[in-house]
Image (cartoon, rainbow, N blue to C red; front, side, top):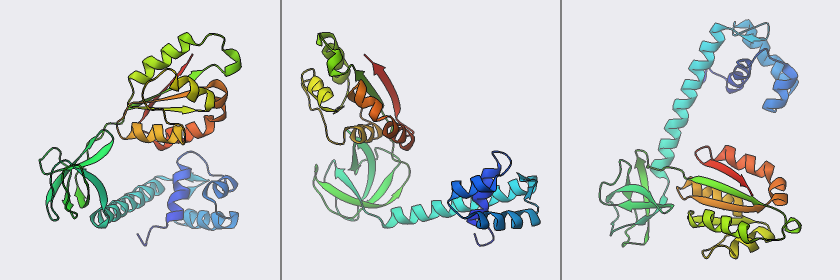
Length: 251
């Protein structure tokens, strides 16, 4: 990718949104205004930008550069997968050197000698059924369907006079989930008194999104006050877990 400068590709990608403003580009890319001006001058001289807008030639240059970058990233990731060791739970006895097939079960990566999926790997650690093995040289896509995540927002403690109905709704939601967590002491108290299973408390929001990403239906219980405090973090987790469908139910 020697003929394609990464910073130039970033600047041209910004130009797809409309006329470029050097000061805004400087802030967005975290480089100096002088550096932006230098690259813009170079792009103009080569006909990739005209009147601060990307030209058809610039679009082609951007497309070709991004495609080369994508191929290089994919190749690097494949090489890392071939050398990196991934932990998996063996569902039968496996021996070092075996070809195993990978799948997800109850949120855990599993390794099997049966062809249960198109994702295969090389076993590098012998293990009995139920033990953790190590695999590398992964090929194919591991089948994984992210689950839904429900956030139940209950009234704050001072607003509740009769919590029987609230606990019934919490119980119904949690009984349909494989992972339950609570944000804040009051939400944890109500969840524990509504649901017979485990309720996670520490790192509740991150853990719930991780469980849902691994295919486990999850529920988060939160008071209205704590939910408002956590809005920014929630938005960040939604963006970082695009496959997880999030529902918010306010009681």
